[in-house]
Length: 68
Image 1 (cartoon, one colour):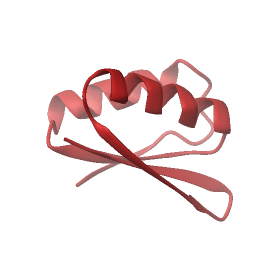
Image 2 (cartoon, helix red, strand yellow):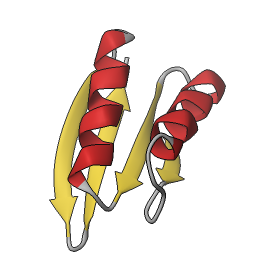
Image 3 (cartoon, rainbow, N blue to C red):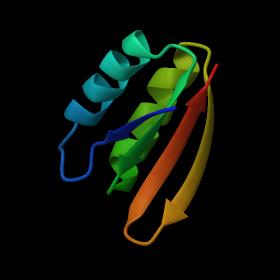
Image 4 (tube, one colour):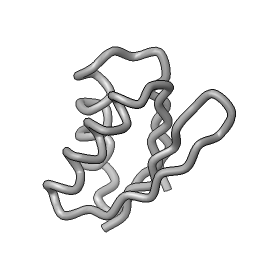
């Protein structure tokens, strides 16, 4: 599974990084962000594209596992 580290990035950059990574690995990716707004925006974007999202918190980050 492709890993995307979008920590420290302001929206919409995490969403754009997610979009690019899904184009390269449409079967699924894992995205790490460091703020709730980015996590919510990514989840909304990928759910709109038909993907499933599992969210978990790790230390100072939020990890989103995105699968088809």
